[in-house]
Image (tube, rainbow, N blue to C red; front, side, top):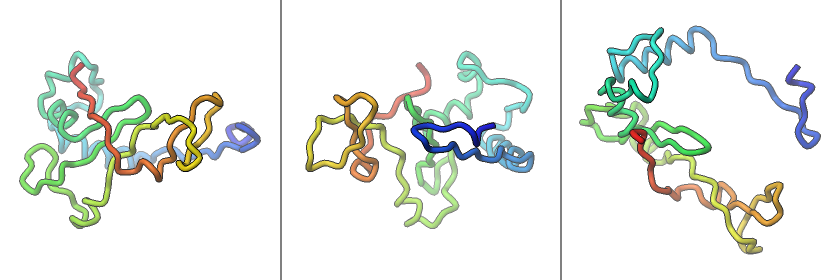
Length: 140
Protein backbone atom coordinates (compact mmCIF):
# COMPACT_ATOMS: atom_id res chain seq x y z
CA UNK A 1 0.00 0.00 0.00
CA UNK A 2 2.71 2.51 0.98
CA UNK A 3 4.63 1.86 -2.21
CA UNK A 4 1.80 3.44 -4.21
CA UNK A 5 1.90 6.66 -2.16
CA UNK A 6 3.80 9.56 -3.67
CA UNK A 7 4.79 13.06 -2.64
CA UNK A 8 5.85 15.42 -5.43
CA UNK A 9 6.12 12.44 -7.79
CA UNK A 10 8.53 10.64 -5.46
CA UNK A 11 7.45 7.24 -4.05
CA UNK A 12 7.56 6.59 -0.33
CA UNK A 13 10.09 4.04 0.82
CA UNK A 14 8.65 1.88 3.60
CA UNK A 15 10.88 0.62 6.38
CA UNK A 16 10.58 -2.74 8.04
CA UNK A 17 9.31 -2.61 11.64
CA UNK A 18 11.58 -3.47 14.55
CA UNK A 19 11.80 -7.17 15.31
CA UNK A 20 10.90 -8.62 18.71
CA UNK A 21 14.64 -9.13 19.32
CA UNK A 22 15.28 -5.43 18.58
CA UNK A 23 12.48 -4.39 20.95
CA UNK A 24 13.82 -6.70 23.67
CA UNK A 25 17.35 -5.30 23.25
CA UNK A 26 16.02 -1.74 23.55
CA UNK A 27 13.98 -2.66 26.63
CA UNK A 28 17.10 -4.16 28.26
CA UNK A 29 18.88 -0.81 27.77
CA UNK A 30 15.88 1.12 29.16
CA UNK A 31 15.84 -1.04 32.29
CA UNK A 32 19.54 -0.21 32.82
CA UNK A 33 18.46 3.43 33.18
CA UNK A 34 15.68 2.71 35.70
CA UNK A 35 15.21 -0.80 37.08
CA UNK A 36 11.78 0.09 38.55
CA UNK A 37 10.21 0.28 35.08
CA UNK A 38 7.65 -2.30 34.08
CA UNK A 39 7.14 -3.12 30.41
CA UNK A 40 3.34 -3.19 30.75
CA UNK A 41 3.15 0.13 32.60
CA UNK A 42 2.75 3.29 30.55
CA UNK A 43 4.66 6.28 31.89
CA UNK A 44 2.75 9.53 31.62
CA UNK A 45 4.06 13.00 32.29
CA UNK A 46 2.30 12.93 35.67
CA UNK A 47 4.00 9.64 36.65
CA UNK A 48 7.45 10.68 35.43
CA UNK A 49 8.62 12.52 38.59
CA UNK A 50 7.95 9.30 40.54
CA UNK A 51 10.46 7.48 38.34
CA UNK A 52 13.49 9.31 39.75
CA UNK A 53 16.21 7.51 37.74
CA UNK A 54 14.33 7.81 34.44
CA UNK A 55 13.47 11.46 35.16
CA UNK A 56 17.15 12.23 35.92
CA UNK A 57 18.24 10.49 32.69
CA UNK A 58 15.74 12.41 30.57
CA UNK A 59 16.85 15.75 32.03
CA UNK A 60 20.58 14.92 31.83
CA UNK A 61 20.92 13.13 28.49
CA UNK A 62 17.94 14.07 26.34
CA UNK A 63 17.05 16.98 24.10
CA UNK A 64 13.38 17.42 23.22
CA UNK A 65 12.45 19.61 20.30
CA UNK A 66 9.40 20.29 18.19
CA UNK A 67 10.82 18.17 15.36
CA UNK A 68 12.75 15.45 17.18
CA UNK A 69 13.80 13.77 20.41
CA UNK A 70 17.50 12.99 20.87
CA UNK A 71 19.52 11.08 23.42
CA UNK A 72 23.25 11.60 23.90
CA UNK A 73 25.34 10.63 26.88
CA UNK A 74 27.42 13.34 28.54
CA UNK A 75 30.66 11.46 27.87
CA UNK A 76 32.00 11.56 31.42
CA UNK A 77 33.65 8.33 32.58
CA UNK A 78 32.35 8.72 36.12
CA UNK A 79 28.76 9.79 35.39
CA UNK A 80 26.27 7.87 37.51
CA UNK A 81 23.30 8.73 35.31
CA UNK A 82 24.27 7.65 31.80
CA UNK A 83 27.54 5.72 32.28
CA UNK A 84 30.53 6.18 30.00
CA UNK A 85 30.12 5.78 26.22
CA UNK A 86 31.15 2.52 24.57
CA UNK A 87 32.47 4.28 21.47
CA UNK A 88 36.09 5.35 21.16
CA UNK A 89 36.36 8.82 22.76
CA UNK A 90 37.28 10.65 19.53
CA UNK A 91 34.29 9.13 17.71
CA UNK A 92 31.96 10.05 20.58
CA UNK A 93 33.35 13.60 20.69
CA UNK A 94 32.65 14.02 16.97
CA UNK A 95 28.94 13.24 17.42
CA UNK A 96 26.57 16.12 17.83
CA UNK A 97 22.86 16.58 18.08
CA UNK A 98 20.64 17.34 15.10
CA UNK A 99 20.21 21.12 15.03
CA UNK A 100 16.83 22.82 14.86
CA UNK A 101 15.65 24.13 11.49
CA UNK A 102 16.88 27.72 11.16
CA UNK A 103 14.71 30.09 9.10
CA UNK A 104 16.59 32.82 7.26
CA UNK A 105 16.05 35.66 4.85
CA UNK A 106 17.07 34.83 1.31
CA UNK A 107 20.78 35.41 0.92
CA UNK A 108 22.33 33.98 -2.27
CA UNK A 109 25.63 33.46 -0.46
CA UNK A 110 24.04 31.03 2.04
CA UNK A 111 22.86 27.56 1.07
CA UNK A 112 19.11 27.39 1.74
CA UNK A 113 16.27 24.96 1.22
CA UNK A 114 12.95 26.33 -0.03
CA UNK A 115 9.72 25.37 1.65
CA UNK A 116 6.20 25.48 0.26
CA UNK A 117 5.91 29.09 1.39
CA UNK A 118 8.13 31.15 -0.87
CA UNK A 119 8.82 33.75 1.83
CA UNK A 120 10.47 31.22 4.18
CA UNK A 121 13.85 29.66 3.65
CA UNK A 122 15.82 27.39 5.97
CA UNK A 123 19.56 27.02 6.30
CA UNK A 124 20.85 23.72 4.96
CA UNK A 125 21.80 21.07 7.52
CA UNK A 126 25.46 21.05 6.49
CA UNK A 127 25.65 24.80 7.09
CA UNK A 128 24.25 24.72 10.63
CA UNK A 129 25.60 21.34 11.80
CA UNK A 130 27.26 21.83 15.16
CA UNK A 131 25.21 24.89 16.13
CA UNK A 132 23.22 24.13 19.26
CA UNK A 133 20.20 26.01 20.45
CA UNK A 134 19.12 26.12 24.07
CA UNK A 135 18.03 22.81 25.61
CA UNK A 136 14.46 22.34 26.75
CA UNK A 137 13.69 20.59 30.00
CA UNK A 138 11.15 17.81 30.25
CA UNK A 139 9.68 18.88 33.57
CA UNK A 140 7.29 21.47 32.15
